[in-house]
Length: 213
Image (cartoon, rainbow, N blue to C red):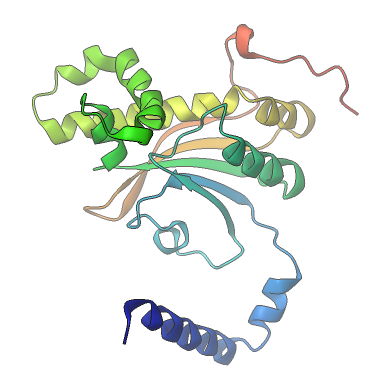
């Protein structure tokens, strides 16, 4: 049996098990989605949002990319964010990094990796901002893990700088934005930072919304 065929068989078994547990499971799931959470995480296959939070399909709206970045020129991420905030009306947005992130480690060296160089440049900027605090750490893995944390925090701030989040804050006092980091060694999530509509933002990044209803 080919490896992908095993996935199809596993899917059939999973679907059958779900129907046996709740005959209306897929009927209800197909009606609509009303998740309370948007998860912006890393593409790493070891960090699946539903698995590590023990949530059901439909509970978390998910966007994943290399090193859980919030890049203001990334139309894919911005489209997901706008849909989640304005249409799904999520209450919480979580940026979730993880220790041992390969993208973060790659951004800490000068190796030419081709196309991904352009993406990693955003992480290099975070490293440049916090280099003095990171470089005093002797252990290489601990240095990269510290950058993982700084990167999560900076991406939360990047979310707060978007007009999408600011407009929702001004109009609805939501969502709360969280910065989390996941430890693959113990399976636990640690919260690093939280921002909501009450938090201060540098005035140069704050938009005026004169057209709110």
